[in-house]
Length: 117
Image 1 (tube, helix red, strand yellow):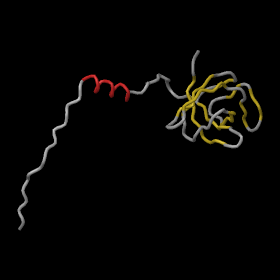
Image 2 (image 1 turned 45 degrees about the horizontal axis):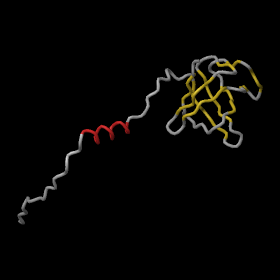
Image 3 (image 1 turned 90 degrees about the horizontal axis):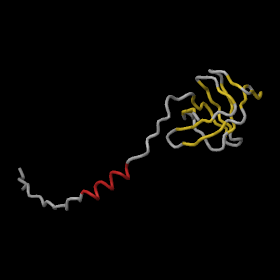
Image 4 (image 1 turned 60 degrees about the horizontal axis):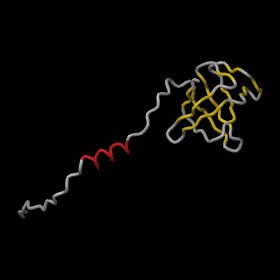
């Protein structure tokens, strides 16, 4: 049986000053937004034509400002065109699959929030 000594070198680290620690913690804090409850979800995205398919939990109209937020997605969009089964509509009822032209990429599973004026 081999006996090993438990001698370890301990390197003394210089304690951080309060200012440095505070500055570091402030930079880690992300802005928390109060968006409320999501009103819909992205179910599909067509990349070439930049159209996202949504399923909303409430009635939605043209001119409504929405925010699409996910793990890597976060942008605002004003609804300019809404289509149901390839037909343009002004008002879309809840529970239907709705196609909306968007400016940026939306990913499946991203949540949709309504931005109130």
